[in-house]
Image (cartoon, rainbow, N blue to C red; front, side):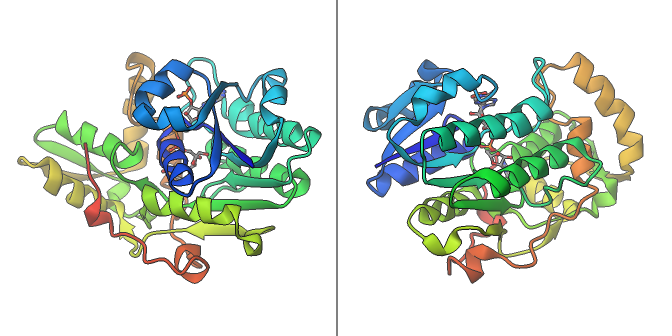
Length: 296
Ligand SMILES: NC(=O)c1ccc[n+]([C@@H]2O[C@H](COP(=O)([O-])OP(=O)(O)OC[C@H]3O[C@@H](n4cnc5c(N)ncnc54)[C@H](OP(=O)(O)O)[C@@H]3O)[C@@H](O)[C@H]2O)c1
C-alpha cells in the first residue's frame, strides 16, 4: 500500500523516504521540482514514485491521493520568502492536504509538527504550526503528530546556519540572547526512524509525541560545540536578541538567502526542551548525541 510523503525533497523528507524504502514500503514522493528531487535522491529515485504537487494548490493534491493508505505530511516553511507565508503554506497547506486525504478515503495521517507549536502563541511560525496541528487533530483520520525539538544532522538548516554565520564572522561572534535559550537537539535519523515506525504502530494514533535528543543544551553550549568544528579564533560576546533584531531585519531585506530571520529569533523565546521524550519512552530508542552532528 502506498505512502504519500509531502515535502519529500526536504531535509527530513530525504531521510524519511530513505528509511521507508529500507523498510520495503511503497513510496509516492510529492515535490514541487521532480528533477531536483531525482538529482538529490540519486539511485533511490528509481525505487519510488515522484509526483508534482503544491500544498497551496488544492486541485494539484487530489490525483496524488489515489490508492494512498497513509500520508506523512512534512511540508512547512521556516522562513517566509518569495511571497510564501506561514499562513498559506504551514496552516492552509496542511488543511488542503488533510481535506484531499479525507476526500480520497486515506485512513492514516502522520503530521510533522514542532516542539513548541501552539496556536495561542504570538510568534507567527509556531502559531501557524500549532493551528495546523489543531486542524489535523480535529479532521484527519487516525492521526499521529510528531513534535521534534531542533533537528541536527548533515545538511540540517538550523545548526548549519549558525556554522555558516560563524565562518563569515571570523573574530567576534554574538552569544545570541546571552546563549541562554535551551534546546534538546535531536538527530534527523532518529526522527526519521520514529516517523516510519508510526506507520505500523497503532498505539501512536491520536497522540502528539515530542522528540528530543539525550541532553539539554543552551545556545551558548551549542555555539561552542559548533565552534569546535568550525575552528579559528572567536570571542563570544553576549548580545541581547533586541540588539540583533535590527541587524537581522536589514539582512532579511538585502540577503536573499539569509540564514537568520526575525521569525527564527522569535523561536529563542520559547523553551525547546522535551519533558516526555517519546524517542525514549515510546519508541525505546537511544537518541544520538549532538556531538555526533556533522556541520557542513
Ligand atoms: N528542521 C528542524 O529542525 C525541524 C524541527 C522540528 C520540526 N520540523 C518540521 O519538519 C518538517 C520538515 O522540515 P525540514 O527541516 O525537512 O524542512 P525543509 O528541508 O525546508 O523541507 C520542507 C519541504 O517543503 C517543501 N515545500 C515548501 N513549500 C511547499 C509547497 N507550497 N508545496 C509543496 N512543497 C512545499 C519544500 O520543497 P522545495 O524543495 O520545493 O522548496 C521542502 O522540500 C516541517 O514540517 C518542519 O516544521 C523541522
